[in-house]
Image (cartoon, rainbow, N blue to C red; front, side, top):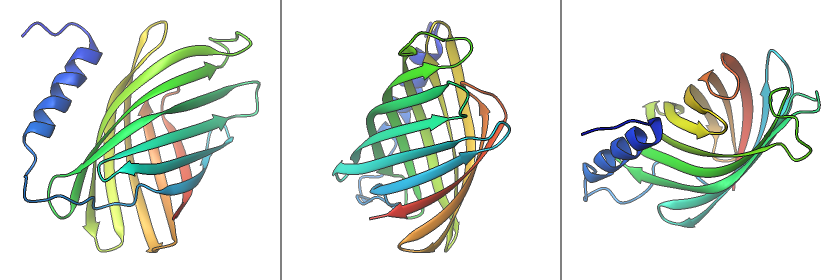
Length: 181
């Protein structure tokens, strides 16, 4: 197989992963209806996300984040979720992005796209962990990799931490509070 771009490689991994899912498991293990507030550190900032399921295994997502330095990352798109087993979901998203920073200083930012594939798993009754890999297609392709942990204190509230290893900015730690509905 002659795979030349990260987008083609990620697409092949997604298809192979979905093909191996167990047909006996048919419900999501995690809530995909939520509102989230994020605080990225170094540099500081604030962000928000909203996700709404439109099908048992599909959802729409809208995100916004800024460091208050005439910058932003706005995104919106579709996601999928599929259970691998009773403790694990495979996820993915396809989003259209507007990125404005010192590299992309047009009035409306640079329009880009994102494709990612992730995995979330319960490792304890109230502790979710996971990660995602992907690609952001802007002027140059950017690889995307992150790890996360989320403590679900109740059905109405959870706290999370995410380490964005690579992406638009590298090595960013972000904390979040999620309100499922």
